[in-house]
Image 1 (cartoon, rainbow, N blue to C red):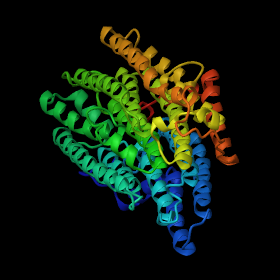
Image 2: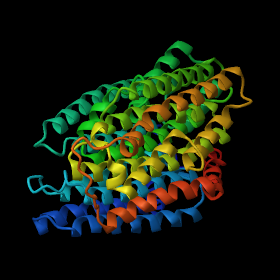
Image 3: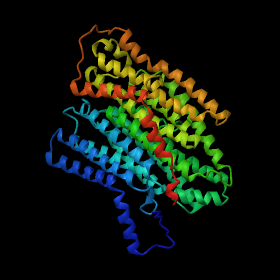
Length: 512
């Protein structure tokens, strides 16, 4: 049921109640996350001490939410809550991704010494805020109204600010939180201003209604482009693309490492989900002006700058967390290549790559957490000789870095191949972007493999050769992520098919 709200002809209260009731049946996963958030807050208040029960409750709640998400496969694709949210395969794909990233973030947090130090405040609220972020990401992936897009982005952003500065006893964490808030506030202001301009031009906030208006009516191209640029400020900030990337290195370095890992995959994926839905639906294929061409050019410029600046700046980093931060900027550029193609093949490649990026990047951050727990540093110079002292973790980290580079037989290779393949045959400019993407991937080979070089080919300056043991559970999770990275690269068809099915009816079914 396409239940958009017409403010000029408000329906009777009985109809409103029926629409809300119908919407609630499709809102069960989000309601489950809301209940989980309240449960964690109450559990923290009742227990009043550190306990392993709270993260276990969070994990169980995410699994239960996943069960309700799986039930949404049987629901028809539609807009609900007066056209504010969409229930479709595209949103369901991202919900699975967010749940997986949330589970991994909780598992990493349980094993993080910087979060579990005695002087660190209670972690009950930490896990509750993490769940609130997942809820906001669910809404970002489903939002079909500009106001809902903005509100859900703010829910994720505010939760991110709190988690980034959670280690309030550490100056670097507080500094990261403050910088994140400043950059986020500016980007948020730009986005809401762009939304107000777009609403003033079209009189609509629903992206399908905006599409219909732009298709049927002529508008001022300059003003429309200005609105698009301002809205892109909000999207660009969330995905960490140039020139909205300045927060990434400082936040990734200063935030607790599990939070950095979650921001690098979950927050980025949510931003891309919202950007894709806006770009594929709100912008007409054949508008009465040149705004579509301007959008493609703008995304191409951002993608190019992100790939070049992200990869070349990462060369000079000695902190592994900052290196992965600049790497994340570069990967945002690769993903934007798939977005600007603006067809199902490109969008399928983006979804596949986001799922692959979640596994390999969280794996890299997890090993970084484990190493920092033992040696108290994330400086690559302190990684010397670790290949002999922690063979499993070092081998797994090497696999993750190979995948981030985009080399076979890992899933990162398949993801980049799909991105670049979607550009071929689209024109000279797209082919040129694909070539630049390949060349910058070669650059990334240098700084990624600097880490295995230090681990395997250089001896520790302290001369310490004692074995480092991370525990059975940590080793098991590291091994699992490493195996998945390779297995998904060898047997990628199921995930590729799932991604294809998730974008095959993007927007079309919701217009009914």
